Image (tube, rainbow, N blue to C red):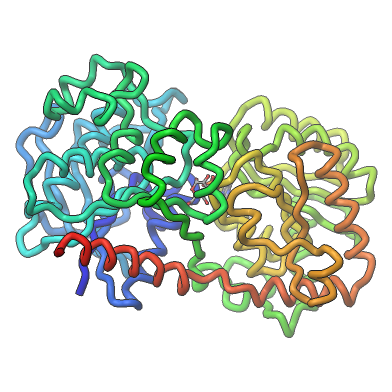
Length: 482
Ligand code: ADP
Ligand code: GLC
């Protein structure tokens, strides 16, 4: 059986700030079903340690970036987990990346170089009885793993780096290079040097045997100057090593018919039960009860997500006869913009600032449509949850959003395959046109119901994509054994 060490800075259900955690938590379970065994390495943040019981020490590193560290092996929700317990790096208040003061931890370079180094050591035998065939590193936080492995002899595992978001590259001042313990030769354009800085993701993309990203469309976008965020040249040079594999979702955690968080579970043959969830959501957001469409957002509030455009469109959306429920946190200015729009439109718009996993289930189950006006979106998961819950997605034509939603144009409607609305470009006008098209569909109850059923029948599971990852690993191993 092929063995994979997956390395990620967040893994659902242990620790999550975004979609990376969902993917790192769900993919191993899907891979297991196609004959790939995964162990997942992540930092032992205090909140993670608080959730696990016991844990067996399986490795120790006396000096890992300035302190001693050990690796604990345990199992959580069906995941085989390795926790990097390095108190000098991870035992502190705040989140995985940001301290309690709201700023990045100043030693993030050391924290995630340590994660990557530990992955490389485990990849070459630090945990007795475990020799992974592949080390699969997610995002910049794990991306130095292939760089370390490149210099650890020929008996090393194959390496894969997955790009979940090119906007976060892990670039640090040159002064840290000496602390990384990499050969001097890696300070070059063929190594980690990146416009005079140390680029964690850049180095990983150079060194990895294979690069993947989380949708076919984003795989094309990152080869362009606009989408490549400075790394398009490197990526074009490695295009034959790059593939886009669309994310799936955990269809057990996200199952409208057996969701413990919603007032009335439902399936596509009992859509009338959604109305109970809609009423509950109206109450939760102090919205007037009526039959106008209830639009929703569940998102980090950032520029990437295009939510400044939505904030400016709130008055138009309410004037068009819709209600709006927003759950999100992030940019303080955006939080303020949504709160003040809600104050202007009491009863028509409600905002919940914060991160609330359970509420996000209730929103998907009760809202009529989910708005995702992202400027770029490597894959996007909320539109996949929305499809599964019959909450029709209204999305920008970018990245994985364009790969996963079928626009209700004339042909798609005739063929009965439409699952949402896609708009372009990412402007307030185009967003409002998309919403106007949505309103037309909503006005015809049977068309709307048919579209909900089609959306709910979309295959958003991991099944097909897990197969693609399995094929990728196996192709890579065959290549290496030649
Ligand atoms: P990204 O990873 O860029 O934030 P994704 O759509 O891939 O975007 O994943 C976001 C994940 O985080 C989804 O599972 C979504 O439901 C969740 N999420 C985002 N914001 C919130 C929030 N405020 N409360 C609850 N869940 C949220
Ligand atoms: C990133 C991207 C998002 C993607 C997620 C999981 O956070 O912004 O589009 O769905 O990673 O791959």
